[in-house]
View 1 (cartoon, rainbow, N blue to C red):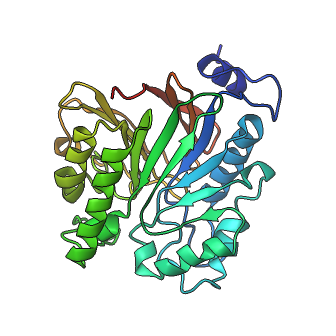
View 2: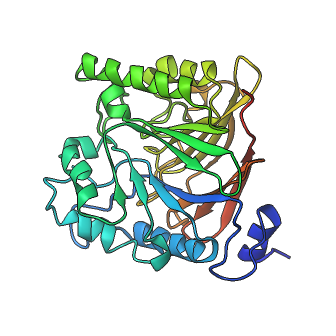
Length: 328
């Protein structure tokens, strides 16, 4: 007999005593990508609304401290200015659960860069939960009742690699401005090098490795992947592919580097077979069912491990993986 959803969570994580209560020794957050709705009424999709509803249910139970959004915040061409009604129609009016009135940390995707990304940064001053301080940034999240912490390098992959459109199967070829890209590469390298966090991830819109529609991003394989390896990062979080994926490779030091793709916030795309563009044996899981109603990731971090659970818009737990603290 299949366990109930709540009991299944309790069997994997820290069993919660009642609705709205939460473990005091864990950091909890949700990861969503590509939530951007559509550019015609009602400016959100059925999948986005379904995913938002399930996020609210999980947040009611587990009281996450924040949400991460991995780019493509507004389809199809971003926003025009800080007064654009899409902030209200596609974001504020969709993620309405009281338990989701928490900090949301944003980065930009390729569709956001088709519009006014600066307006998205400025919206930080208008919203109680929209946090987008700059195009790339580093933040540390303390794990309660411990000295451990999670570090995340938020990356703008469009500035690093160039822009692209979903109707174009070609990968981005090069950045529009090499000096701007080089400045960000210096920032990313320094953040990874200097971080002493027990768990350390980079997060960007384009995936490093992917077996699906777009496939791996050569620019990131060539430059970001070696940095994750060199500085012992735990992994990389991405969107862009409208599905779920988990890939894992061994670093040169023999540690696992985990790659999670969560891009089902507003729609679900095809799982094309691009397995030949990732390291052999690295693809551990992928999911792109059109009956999913979208999806998101629930993450819980303690000083001893980090658990990631992939959940679809039907509220079904699909896949679970565990990440261990870095060896520094």
